[in-house]
Structures are given as C-alpha cells and as structure tokens.
Length: 92
View 1 (spheres, rainbow, N blue to C red):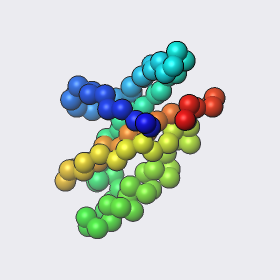
View 2: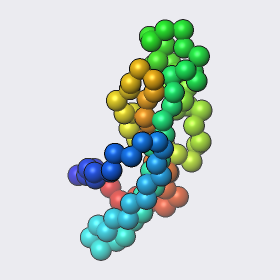
View 3: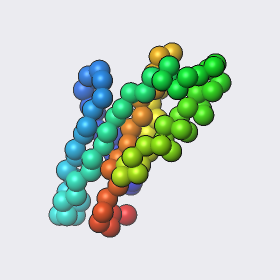
View 4: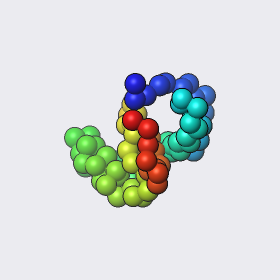
C-alpha cells in the first residue's frame, strides 16, 4: 500500500499540510503544499496550451518539492499538490 486518502476541509486558497504517520511503530512526517495556479498567469493563447503551462509550472517549481497530484482544472485555475522531498530514506 503506497497511499491512503485523508479528507481535507474544502477551504478555498492555498494550503500547507503536515501529516504525521506511525507505521509499525516508526513515526514519519510528510509535508504537502496545495497551490492554485491561474491560467491567465501562463499567458495562454488558447486552452490547448494548458498542458504546456502545467509542464512549465512543475519544472520551474522549487526543487525541494515534487509533484504529487494535479487537481481538477476549472476555466480559471488548476490546483496542484506538491510533497516536500525527504532528506532521509523513506519506508517502502
């Protein structure tokens, strides 16, 4: 099992989430960041350019964070979730 779902309150805007998990008695912390990116900030000519916009957002993002999830886009924005990279070895 690589993932579990945790319900997060539907609060508008960006979020920083810290999750502490204990697996087989070993406590591990995970940090997530949900950010809202507006399509207009990409200077799109048309909606077919949205994939290129997402690629640019992810590739230009802080290298301490990795892509975890791309949310459901709207006409105005797309929510993207990043997980902070761990400096220690992770449980598999």
